[in-house]
Image (cartoon, rainbow, N blue to C red; front, side, top):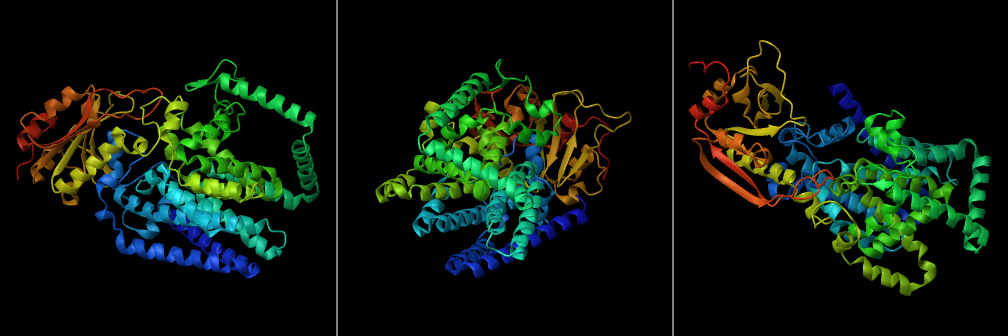
Length: 598
């Protein structure tokens, strides 16, 4: 991204913050009873920011606490050490550079996410307390979010989930202000403008947000532009729902027949690998329509046979306390029940959930990674569900409040959800203890302890095919990938040689050959990661011939949880760091000319 483009997104974020402040002032002016709550929320944000700036620094974060949730090869892990990508758009990088302009490495992004996670928890707690008019409910919502395994996994991650969670929660206020018919046109316009800017920023972080947010925006705009037909349609929906509530047998029979036929068809036609024999089209809907890769998941979520309609009720109890999962489902139903007030937002949340489920390829690891932005929104929906239970009496609400303190129940998922993968299907171990995450933390520790050395490792290619180097290319000349990472493609092997966390004075000039770099380095460390624990282990053994073992880690091998690789192997995962003599490094890795004399 060019500096101009980055500055443009930074201006957009600042405008969104200013617009949100104007919305908060307008809301407080019209609702005096909400002024203490808004003032407390603002003071909480200031306090969290001050505490974060005083106590958290990227270089002081322990590598053991960092959860690197992005999948990829060893090369991708190494590149994230210096500059995180995380499948996020330009607005995300621009926002983070407002805090730390000179670094976007794994430690810095994890430090940022500690702040955004706490802000999301605070925002969800304030929203829940406001919706229920109960500080106790808001406090319980904050506690549940803090203990939630998805929240814990994203707190020290490199994912954009915490930023998106804050943006989604922030969008609730301008959206509510825009939909308040009692406000003036100017105030409603400010709410709509702020909502539009926030939506654009979120879309430039994850493009799926653009299509999903269109549900709330489109429904509201249709009502503003064509109030009579939209109001008539809402009245028809209300009459239909009234018929169901009053026990209209014909209405119930028709709805039950359609629902049963759809559920049976969706269950029978769904398979983890794709579409079953009863599915009306052989390929995903997004692929059939030729939609771009990222947007195809949002289109796939429109497929009525996509099984996440059924997955939601029994996936939530594995991620949230049982009562909280029930309240979320009730709140979602209440939101869909009022199409003009909350229907657009409820549809957006449901669409976003279905989009992330479609993008996860039925891999629970990816579900946990994608669902991070939705967890605070679940807290808000739970507050809506709590308010809907008031007619049932205080005893029911008290029982629900007590059960909210019960932690998530991973055993429910283990016994009831037929996920491919390890027995610890849900819980914090799912995203934290994969082989890739362990490798990322190991590299952080090695770079911290041996950063003065030339660090080398091996990485398997995605395709496993040899690299076709241009004719005349010096095989010892590295490809500079930036942020201290050099790549030496090995055309005759299945893996490539990587140098990482290299000091700037070592790679200055950019065209030094491998022997020249060895001559300049004060020491050389060969690091064995995931690549050296598979079929390429013999190659790694040859790399360390004549080397001295410096450090070693051994832990259970928990592979990336994907239907193609459902079971872990019995062999442990072993990481090693070797002190490699310069002459042995040149003899093993040099493919061209000898080193230049000093």
